[in-house]
Amino acid sequence: MTSNELKNLTHQYVMNTYGRFPVAVERGEGARLYDFEGNEYIDFTSGIGVTDLGYGHQAWADAIAAQAKKLGHVSNLFYTEPSARLAEILCKRTGMSSVFFANGGGEANEGMIKLARKYSYDKYGEGRATIITLQNSFHGRTITTLKATGQDVFHQFFFPFTEGFRYAAANDFASLEAAAGDDVCAVMVELVQGEGGVLPLDYEYVQAVKKLCEEKDWLFLTDEVQTGVGRTGKLFAFQQYGILPDVCSFAKGIAGGMPMSGIMANEKCSGVLTPGTHATTFGANPVCAAAGLVVQETLDDAFLSEVTAKGEYLCAQIEALDLPCFGKTRGMGLMIGIEVKDGYNKGEIVNKLIENGLLVLTAGPGMRLLPPLVITREEMDKGVAIMEKALRA
Ligand SMILES: *Cc1c(COP(=O)(O)O)cnc(C)c1O
Image (cartoon, rainbow, N blue to C red; front, side, top):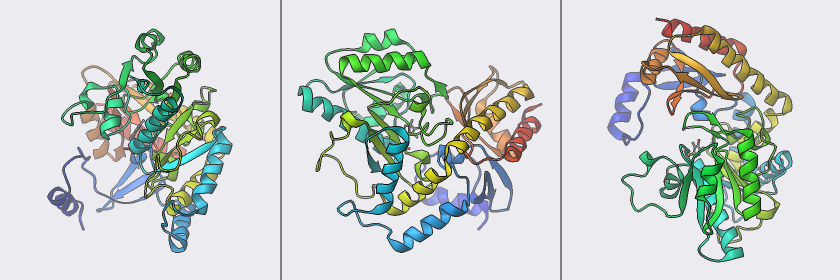
């Protein structure tokens, strides 16, 4: 098959819901992808923050194959080993108490929202179901998580949306206080807003929000679908802020490219969801969990320090280019945003980079880089050299 044949086949039979880059990917190795003609691309996207171990990772592929041969699926009506071991590791490495496994980020956030509302209902009864989220956030594509997303552009077409969300401005504590009320049960945030443009929340702001939540018995919920699993240089971004949320969701990188997500709850919230109140057929799939175990084994403390060092290195290299189209870089670990200067179009920048063999993402008003966490200095240097060649004009 050629790249063009694949593009035509896709356009004919697959629903046209994605604005796709003009690249048909056949295979990958490390942080490099190859199309059907053998052209190489340096990958600064990792499948939108998913393939943290890169492509063709031997131990990851072996664990998936071995588990698929042993037991591919049996449902949560039975006990299975890989997900129980993965839950234990996640709790021991974070201080959380229990885990519920699901399949995607939006679905994990649905579970987190259900948990928060049930916690409040069990204790206070009806009328305390509102969750405050932040403007410019992104929480998913289900009818409920679209409404939880604090951007009007997502509140279209699919009416009626789920009620019970109010929005506060990020990094503005007065705005959060103004959104308070007797009907509130929780605050949900991304500690680094991802789709909104790689915007980290201020350290002091997060401490103040956490304290207010404790005073009001609101649950503090962190959506770590994008920031979790080593992306920021800690296993979870809440560890960057020295706090333990009541509930935290994760997805994207958890199993290195296999579909898996979940929520973790602290001691106070670990027993809220009881038999019959929450479930999913595919959740805790043994093959996905076996892949997740390899991710956890790989992301030890030394590896996570390297993520921080690589992020600093890549930002420094990009700023040193001093390209006319780029302003400052920002972010945490290997979650990097680049400001695009007025007069430059980020879509055109993406296309020029692709033509020269570098894949990047956009987010909010600028560029977003989410390279595989295993990316090498050589691969980063190659990517930066492509930026210089493609964007200097
Ligand atoms: C990607 C993302 C989601 C949605 O995850 P899906 O797996 O696409 O459902 C939710 N929250 C955040 C912060 C994300 O980055």
